[in-house]
Amino acid sequence: MKLCPREFKAMQSGWRKWYIRKIELATFKKFGLRIEDRDILEVGCGSGYAASLLTAEAPRSYTGLDIMPEQLALALERQLPRARFVQGSADDLSAFPDGSFDAVLDFCILHHVEGWRTFFDECRRVLKDGGCIYIADLSRRCIHLVDALLRWDHAEEALFSFEELEREAKRRGFCTVKKAIDLGLEGYFCFRKE
Ligand SMILES: C[S@@+](CC[C@H](N)C(=O)[O-])C[C@H]1O[C@@H](n2cnc3c(N)ncnc32)[C@H](O)[C@@H]1O
Image (tube, rainbow, N blue to C red):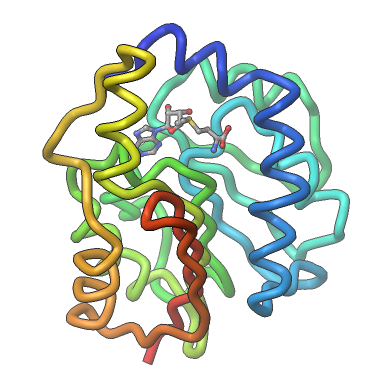
C-alpha cells in the first residue's frame, strides 16, 4: 500500500484525534453503534487512537487490524485492556472465523484498500446476523482534491464514489441503515448484513 509520509504524520495529529472522537465515532453512535459487551473489529486501526476510545467502553472484545507492522507496534504500546491487534488487510479477513463480530468499523481507511469491494464480502462472512459495518470515509472527488492541494499520492484503484460504495454494499448483501454525506466529499454509512 502507499501512504505518503505527510499523511502518516497527519494521522498522529491532535486534530485527527479530535475528529475521530467528536465527529466520526460520535456519528457512528448516532447511527446506532453500541460498544459495551459487543465484539468489535476496526479495520486500519493505525496507532490505536480509536482503539483507546473503544476499549474504554467495555466491549466484549476489540480487534484492531492494520496492514503496517509499525502502526501495530505503536498500538500495542498502549497496552489496552480487552484489545488484540492483528496484521492483515481489510480485504482479507481470513484470520477471523465466520460470525465473529457485531460491528466492523472504518475510520477513513477504505480509500486505501484496492480490494474495497471484497471488503464487503469479507465483512458479510465475519459479521454475526444483523451485524453492521460503520464507515466514515472520503470520496474519490475528495481524495483528488486532497492530492492536488497537499501533493499526497493515493492509489487510484482504491478510490470510489459514494454511489459506487453503496451499490457494492447492496450487491454484496447489505442494506443501508443510515447515511450522511457532506458536500459529496466525506460520507458516513451504517450498512447492515441482511
Ligand atoms: C489514513 S490512516 C488512518 C488510521 C486511523 N484509522 C485513523 O483514522 O487515524 C490509514 C491506515 O490504514 C492502514 N491501511 C492501509 N491499507 C490497509 C489495508 N488494506 N488493510 C488494513 N489497513 C490498511 C494503514 O496502515 C494506516 O494505519
